[in-house]
Length: 160
Image (tube, rainbow, N blue to C red; front, side, top):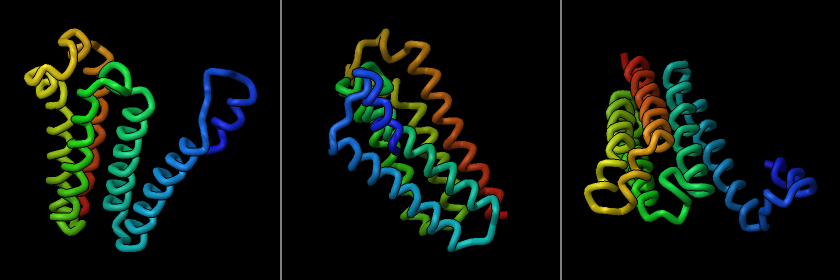
C-alpha cells in the first residue's frame, strides 16, 4: 500500500492524496477481513481458495474500474455497470448464506453479469460502440468472467 507513496517521490505520474490512501486501506481491509472469515469458518481448501479468488476478483474489478475505468476512462457512465456485477456477487453470497453450493451459483451469475456488461451498455447507449467492443474491454471482460467462473467451480468442488 505504500508503493504509491514511494512512487510519488520519483514521478509526477502518481499523485495520491490522503483520501486515496484511505480508500485503498478500506479496500484492502475489506479483502483481508473476508479472507480471514473464510479461513476461520471452514477447513475446506477448495472453499478457502474460491473465497480468496472471489475476493481478489471483486477487489481488482472495483480498483481498476475506480482508478482508470475498464470502458474508457473512469468517468465513462458505462463503468457503473460493473457495480452491478459486484452487487450480483455480494447479494448472491448473502442469499446463499455463504454456503458453497449457493456461492457457486452466485459466482456463476457474477460471471454472466460481467460478460453482459458490454452488451447492456451498448443496448442503452452508455458508451460509444467502438469503445465497448474494443479488444481491451473484451479481454478484461473475459478475464474477469473467467475469474468468477473459477471461483464458481471451486465452490462447487467445496460443496461436493
